Length: 416
Image (tube, rainbow, N blue to C red; front, side):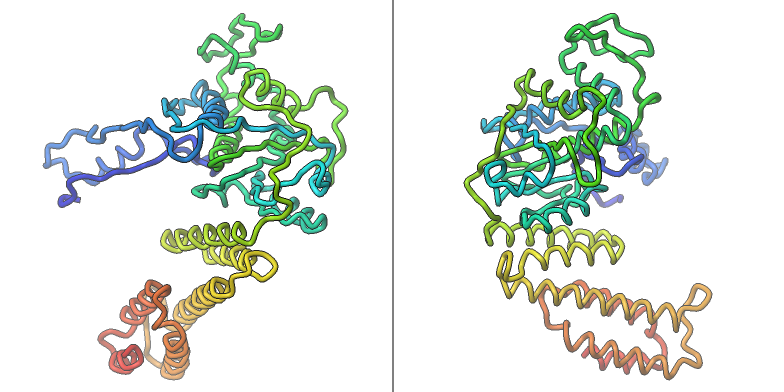
């Protein structure tokens, strides 16, 4: 680090979507400080915090509803509030209450083929299965999947029903009341302040209800995925559940509060003028998934997660969706390269790696098998400009194992 003159890091602590993992103040600074020698005479607080002021992703109306959720995080969970401004105005977010999720297959209720649905991660597979049954062809992403991605039109589906199922409904009613509060104190006793005739129940949520932070970060991250039109959709009955008979649901309470604050507008239907997702949109979403998969590869994330992402991308390029044969072929090719690379690594570990080091004594037959598999891999992928890094990884592995051994020339010939 002694040769580095400056480093720019960009992060948003309100978009931590991993449960229980938070970006604590000072963490990054402490990490850098630990790498600096005490002899250098540097002070600990070497980092300058710069808060960005302009939001280039979305418009003012979407930003307003997201900032409302962020105020909840700032009040009790010490997440810094931002003072960002959008460059443009747009359409106010829309709120749609439906009886059941299957109503989305009714074109008089929902017509929006280019809308991308975002759902709580635990609910994604269930909603995707239901959409397939209903022949609703819109893409559905979990919040973790969508983090880092942006879409023109986004619909958050079932978030408040999910939060209520987790047992946090009363606390969320309270934090929604905070949005109308003139007080910012956070203590373990009531404030004496009434909101809409109800006493504000103030407490130390960090200790008493830490799950609110995880849920609010999930909602905030989902809200900020939309570049243009934003929808929030809630059903009275979700797949496998019954309609609640216990008073006003959290979804109804939240929708009324957001409407009263003029952060969103209730509607009886959604008509985006597009019955099905266009091929161009399917292809665009597929490219986003591939980009995300490549980032995961760079971050050395588990193979199964990357594989799932590339399979989802393939679905967006098929004739029935994006209808792009070259992209579908390249996506399949990249996945095959990753699978063969994984097999080579697993073979190496199983046959040559013994007690922390590589040992080749008595492994002549295994070396021949590995050489043949390596030759097949290189003959298929070494000339592909999209797979340069994968081939480099394999080459580095081979050099690590065979450099300085009697097999070195043999493997050098294979690469040549």
